[in-house]
Image (tube, rainbow, N blue to C red):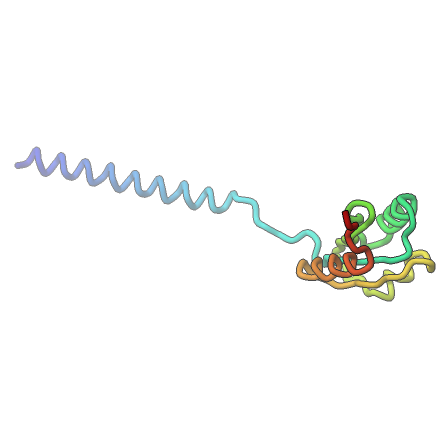
Length: 132
């Protein structure tokens, strides 16, 4: 009976140590996982009309990427369906318009991931698909 009690007690201690080790491992794993942070607080989807060539797009992208507060500015393919502007700072539509060439017209300027669809719809309105 004494052996059975000793054996049961030893298994209990081993089981408790195993649970403790697993708990510590989970806490350590949880604390070392990278925290998801949004590096860019503002994302703007923009549709610009008046672009006639790839050189216009390249010039616009290179000019705006150098502006203060702009972290990312690129067009989505060519012809450009929309431009995506990422920034840590809030950039108003008036400020954005003052940065671009006056021959270009900002048709759509909205913030947030959900505004991508609006820019795409406007692109489709101005550039209907080719009929085969």
